[in-house]
Length: 107
Image 1 (cartoon, one colour):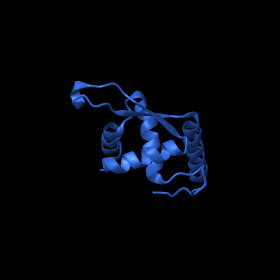
Image 2 (cartoon, helix red, strand yellow):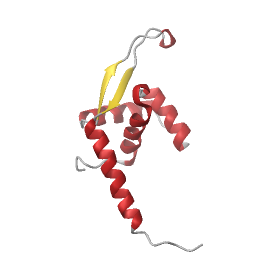
Image 3 (cartoon, one colour):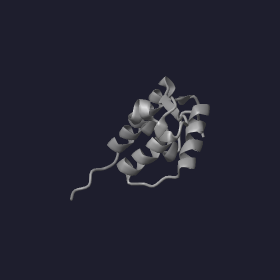
Image 4 (tube, helix red, strand yellow):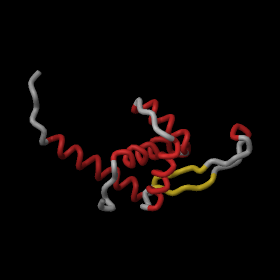
């Protein structure tokens, strides 16, 4: 796979990080996928994908503050990088270009 390509699940996770902004962490991404895509995903698969995106330089992460809601545990917050934003834009433009080539069907 070229560095400028992503699998569908990677693209969805990267897009969710962009959507959620400061609130992009594992469980929030799982919830957002369920709400927006009506799709159930496993938290561990989300984490594996987030770390893979981080290795590719498309997101970065840092530990958030301690919260009593999480029993004193910190959560890892993910942020999309400029490279991640550029890649999403390129994917969107490529997809739109292809859709323009699809013949229109009369209903």
